[in-house]
Length: 288
Ligand SMILES: [Zn+2]
Image (cartoon, rainbow, N blue to C red; front, side, top):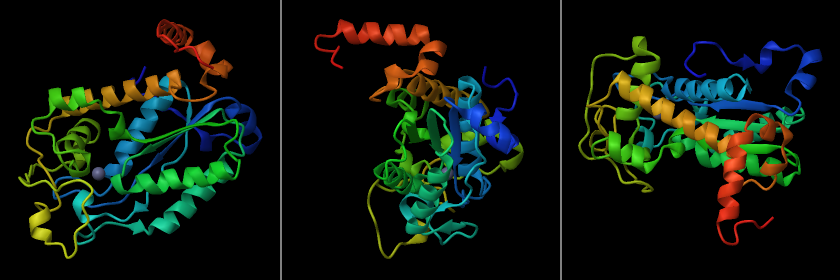
């Protein structure tokens, strides 16, 4: 169903008189991105466009609504995004981002949707997004709403990167690297220039440095390698991410009330039956 070119249904195309009934018991997908440098070969909009593409694909397959993407995200850091040395990164501070996301989600979940899926496309957004959601949850505003929030790369299996990418540097260093370049070649080839810079010393994950030697940490904003990028690889990766995302939402794995959702059961009866069989087949796997 994805890739058929049809646009998913946009929540904001509904009227105020339609929206409550339209989203009752349904899924809403919200892409959250960033405006951030992505080297000399990719536009500032990569994290936004990729989050939108994943969100649109999920929405098509789950017959869900999409929300307009949040374009401005958290500050770029040298070890995962090149940092603010490079022009074009538009950001807000972490506290502002938490407030913004929390208040947006708070007003959004007044609608009677069954579940909210948030697709993040910017590495540095993730902790602030999770914090915002947890603040909304602590206020009791997510009672009865399922939430799936993830960065799209978190759904990529290690077996996929092992099979498809030579010397995978870790997702923190995949900034403007082979995966983002390939996805952009597949989705928006008109926005990709011909340069393919490589950086042979990707940063280590989870290390904060000060002061930073900008010329050492990246090659013109690229933290790892772009060699080997292709539209075909991007298409394969997008398919993999969408398969994983749709399975995650349909199975409701780890959710307390995943089994009790009538809309989930009716659309995914076969999958749920198989999942239930697997659980009951395991000793002690049938606990409530
Ligand atoms: Zn990016």
